[in-house]
Amino acid sequence: MRYFILSSVIFLILSCNSDKTNTKQMNTIINKTSFGSTPYGAADLYTLNNANGIEVAITNYGGIVQAIRVPDKNGKMGDIVMGFDSIDGYLSTHPYFGAIIGRYGNRIAKGKFSIDSVEYSLATNNGQNHLHGGVKGFDKVLWDAEIIEGDNGEVLSLDYISENMEEGYPGNLNVNVQYELDSKNQLKITYKAKTNKATHINLTNHSYFNLKGSGDILSHELMVNADNYTPVDSTLIPTGEIANVKGTPFDFAKPTAIGTHINDENEQIKFGGGFDHNYVLNTHTIKDVIAKVFEPTTGRVIEVFTSEPGVQFYTGNFLDGTIKGKGELTYNYRSGLCLETQHFPDSPNKSNFPSTLLKPGEDYETSTIYKFSVSKN
Image 1 (cartoon, rainbow, N blue to C red):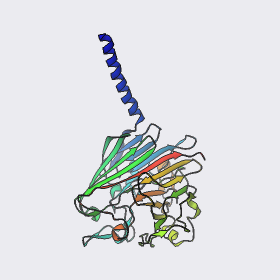
Image 2: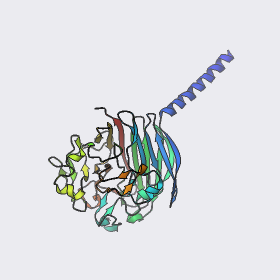
Image 3: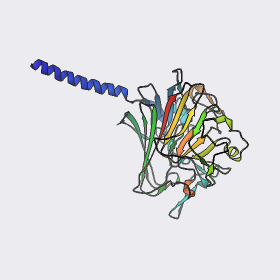
Image 4: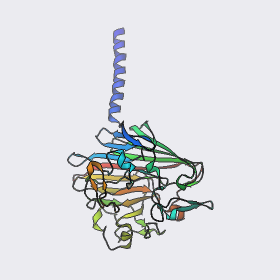
């Protein structure tokens, strides 16, 4: 009898441990490897792996998404984001490949805004305007990284303290960004921040997608769930107008090949050199699809969900073939597209736009999901 009870106890313990092991195998795991040296310390590469074979590699330098490997309709794996094989490429000049952008994603007119009648001056690193956080934005800092447990397995958590007046922004800003890959092939990015002084904040990720892996993105089909967009002036600063997309090249209410209207005789298209505009989303709850990209030859699909009110659609108009990326691949004109979820550009100077002001005692939190799948149609 004692032998039977002891055997039963051992069986239960082994069963419980087996269940935990199986659950662990089903959930996302993260592998950490060295990625090289930066002026600020050693960088690491964290590769998120789910049970379906999807891989997302992220470095704590700039919080950069270095690779996203997903299957095509024939099951062949391919990397669908632009970037570099080593840290050296990211330390050189590049157009924000895969990076966390902050404190302010997109442009602020003439690098100035006022809070409580106090004017603040930022770097003007994009002509006369401020772009993507300045000369040394969040894309060029070494984040503190930690692997934590989440609902779907291991999560990469990144922390950075942006000190008062860094790049001209007021307040000490504590920022946390978490990358989570689940069993539904969803990459969720959650942004959180707190400040001790009123400041403006607009965080996003600047991944360049090419669902073919190479070539241009003009045959990619795009849907954006937005009736309106924000027109810009010749320096790509919004005019303040909220304009309807119907009857314009900016209408992607139905899936449309990106190349269909990208060269239209349209003033806004000329200003952007193609598409480089903010869309005013019809919905901004994390449960609703706000954009969908489909690439016909591979069948690869990306769906985007966000709690943000806008998304910047950019078609790689400033890529000019001078950058060699992964595998010595040349990144040519319009060889990548970005869907940067965000508040609107120049919101600090546009009272009719959703506010980007964060005050002491308030919590900044937004989330974006990129969901990867395949369509065989």
